[in-house]
Picture: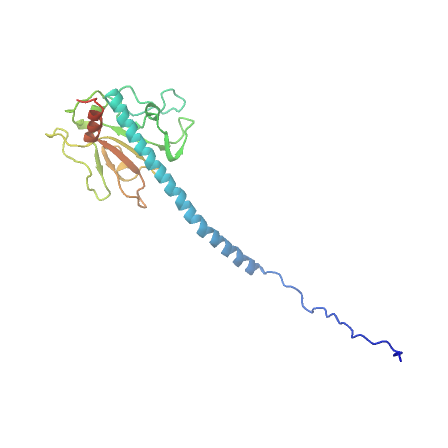
Length: 244
């Protein structure tokens, strides 16, 4: 016998939530942003350090190439080039060594990069377009005048150009005895350096007084300097058959 009343199904009750979603407060958003900034900063610092280390390595490599170019120039010409003292970047002589750096032309200046066929700037350099443009990243160059003319194995340093390289503690890396000493001292006869990341000559390099500084980097010194000593140059020239 069929049931006259259909079976009742249990009612489904949909309960609406009595609460609603709460958004982030300004304080929570600020904290989240701060955390993101800190995380990004922790990633950027090593990256910045890596970029700076790469620039230092590139500058050191460029300086070694400059050293070889200077020695090569001496082998070909029997002398070292004079510095470049031209200040106008539009001048045809810009980047070329002066034809003479005797008493009327300073033996201090900038590297004649065109003459040597090397890079004109270090890794932090900015190309100049005007005479009034600052010199940022130009290679600084100093040479002993006695070696900017044809020289021999007996050529000693010029008394007025005697060069010395020291470290920050004042320790001399090359002899400070007079050029007239016998035998003549083995002083640097050419110095080239980059002013480094801060683009400003530091320590002894802040003035062209014949004393220069080659040192480990520090908060107050970041210059990168190389020099050519007389024996090293003579050795290469003898090996090339250019001396005696």
